[in-house]
Structure formats: structure tokens, C-alpha cells
Length: 241
Image (cartoon, rainbow, N blue to C red; front, side):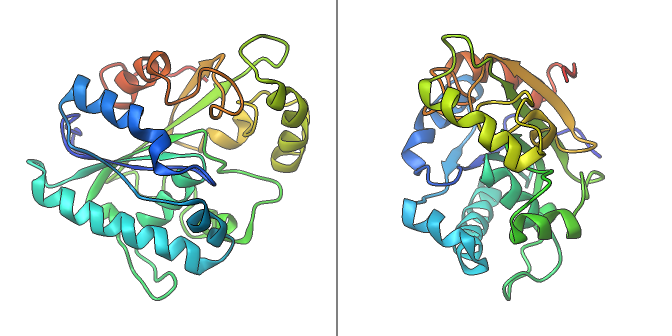
């Protein structure tokens, strides 16, 4: 695939039950450091509760599609960079797809040439039906000839001050339900084995929580963005997995 311009517009889709305001600092950092146009997909907790069904995914992906087309018209490359946090990263893999979903064909791979996934639950022993559908239709980096896939995972040590009390209480159950191993390393919610999408470029961030509920430093914290952004943008191709 052709090199991806780090200055092209960026779309951010957040994670389950996290409203778009939580990503304002991430969007602001990219705009100030990279000079890119950045848009965060509007989402409410109600929108996310609906994602238990296909109609909920379509509601959010329709918004993604509208924003991508708008950003594409402003892009000097004609392409858009996608960033998905948590469930957002899985949903954006579906957005890239060219098969009908809930009456729509998004074919985002024609408009977007980079997908950065932050703590997204890709591989799972008991995936939800819709997440399983993504892996069935578009396994691993399905559009790798056109899209640069980067998966970023956090490794949060639960016996350190980096982990919140909530993470210390809930991580084992979450890891068990996703990977089958309660002792699996992960970000307090998603284990590494799930977050590191097969065949993608991979980066593991130490002492990094899934979100603010799980620890003070998460993927959207400035000190963590400084670690994953250069690698995601191809300034440093190193892999730490």
C-alpha cells in the first residue's frame, strides 16, 4: 500500500458507554501537534446501549460515514485516518467492509487508509454476535493492501498505583470472559491477547489503563498519546508486543 500522510483528517469513534466529550483532549492533542482536522463521532450512552443490536451499530456507523465523506472532501490526499477506542475499533473494522450490513454497504476501505485501534476487543473466546460477525467477514487485517492497521494495547499491573480500585476488583472477571484466562495481562478491561489484532502492527503501552475508570493514565492521556501516535503514524515502525 502507499504511504499514509500523517496530516490527513482524522475521525475518532469512542468506546461503549463513553460519550464523545471524553475524547476532546485526544482530538485537541492531534490538532495541536499534527495540524490535522479531527472530528469525534457524536455518541450518547443511549446510542451505545443500542449497540447490542445491529440497528445500534448502524446508527453510529451512519454517523461515521457522513463525517468521513465530509472529511474526505477536505483531505489533500482524498483519504481519512480512523481511530477507534475499545468497541469503536471493532466497529470501524466493519465500516471498512464491502458487504451489506443492516441494509448498508459502507466500503470505508475506499475512503480510509489507516485504522488505529486502542484497547479494542478483537479476538475473544465468547464474542458478542456482532463482534463475531466482524471477525467472520473481515478476519485479521482484511484490507491490508489498502489500509494500515495498528493495534495499541495497554499492560496495567493491578498491584501498582497505576490501577484504580475498580480495575483491581473487576479485571480478572473481564479477562476471564474475553480470553478465558483471569490472569491474562491487559489494560484492566481488555486482555492483550484480544487487543492485539492478528497481522496488524502492534504496540503495547506499559502502565496504561483502558479508560479513566481503570486508571489515571489511559490511551487518551497526553503522555500515552505521545507514545503511540508516532508509531501509529509511521514515524517509528518499532513493534513492542
